[in-house]
Image (cartoon, rainbow, N blue to C red; front, top):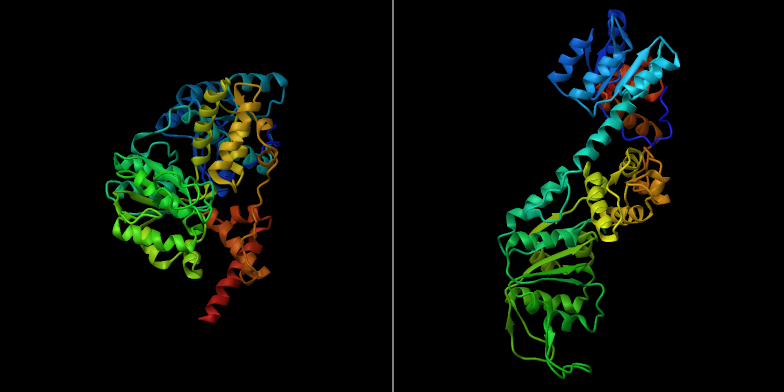
Length: 468
């Protein structure tokens, strides 16, 4: 039986592809109907030869095979599967419950074992668990390859939202247009700005300034420079960052935290493309690409006056938003793999990958600190790892013990809280959508019978008809 109940569950894979191998027509039909009703795509084979043909015909996520297939064996199915699709798990079903049969199947490469008569719910759970494990293993194998570089530099990921942001940066890289990068703390805004600088081919330096970390009485000197004697401690002339970044890129982080007085002078500098050092009278021209960033709601900052509206329009000729890590599906393991390589090299530790249970927990966690939190998590895990791969126990308690809450309302204010009837309808419609309108599968997931679900849907349709 499955012994994987202790593993944290991933979000359910909506449509795993299952190959059913059984020489009994009735059982093949039964398995096909059960799995199809649960939203899976099912192909069938009645012998080992047909199974091999199906495996060669296309990708299969899970194989469900009887142990005894006429005069053939499910162990042969295991062998053919490992030869054709090595990462595809095989679940063996049999009416022979001896330990020898179990050991033989597992030695042949079976990932799990089900004894007939098979409980339908256990069958569905086992197949989905196998598909989830295989998905993680395939991802980990893919990530052993070096990450893509090219013009993107160190930006790692392939999620659609991230790729749209990078594509926007790429398209304006060869211009001198100002860019405003928004996103939560830890999403990699400075990394994106550095990538933009590299893509631009500008010959000068990349200079980064945290506008919220410089005392108000020093920020003008830091930005525009000063002449000797301009203030106490000004013992010599000094260039500001605009001049230091001449022919390069100036990155102004947390632009909304810049004092109002400095914003006025920054606006003038951007308009005139020149600065006047503090205490000086001579204008110094610069050719500097300005990239700014903020983790705040920039529209609110403009509305409240924290960021001048005219300065905002100067800075945000192109506005690019970096999505939080929780919305970058598929990027967590790519980033984790990269950080493992970085910190293993830096610390001299012989750590080269993730165990599947650790990978599953990284995927289940919602990463409120985004990429920075993931980097810290991996750095700690590499330092504590006792084996060549990171295991679940190596992860920080906050990540290791995290449980997924499928119903989270933390971001809703009081006015947005739905009543129970609305909430029930929204959730049922969500489940129906997940199962492509299959009421049998949706009812099973909801824990109600199909007739009850049907009555609710009919009642909602009738209510909408009355409103019309």
